[in-house]
Image 1: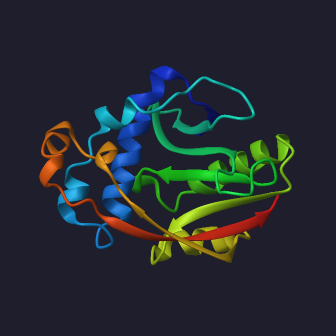
Image 2: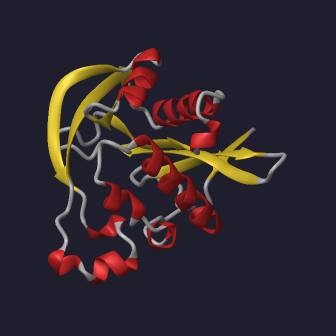
Image 3: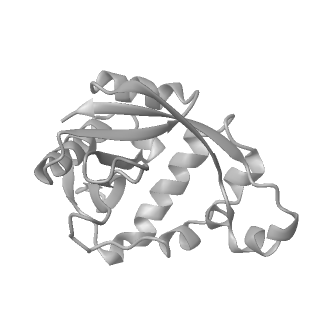
Length: 186
C-alpha cells in the first residue's frame, strides 16, 4: 500500500471511495434514499487537490499498488470551529473503501494525517464523528482520541445528492445529523 498526496486527477477515484464508504458506514444512520442518491461525479467536483498550503485542506491517499486504485483517504487542515483557528488541527475526514475495512489501511492513513498536522505545528487535533457510528468511534478511541464534550447538529444539503435529486431540491427534506467531537494530542 502506498500513501501519497492526492492530485487533481484522483478526484473521481476518491469520490467513489467516499460514496461507497458513506453508503456502508451510514446505513441505518441516514435515510436510504439519501445514501442511494450520493453521486461520485458530483462529489468529485467539490475537491481541490494538489494545493499544498498550511491554511488549506490536504488529502493523503492509500493506493493499492497491485490494483492501482485508491482504497482510502484522509483530509486534514486547520480546525474550522469558532475560536480555534490556529490552535487546533482537524481531521476533516478519513474514509476507507468498505472492502478494505480492518486491513490496516485506516491506521496507516491516520498515522499520515497525524504526522501532517504535527508537521504544521499543531499540538492537538479534533475530528467530528456521527454520533452513534460505533465502528468509527471505536477506531478513533483505539488511536487515542477522546470525546471533548462538544456536539453539533448539521443538515446534509444538496451537495451530497445526485444531480437528479438536486433538481428536486425544492421538495427534498435534507437529513439532519448529530455529531460529537473528539480530540487528541499529537
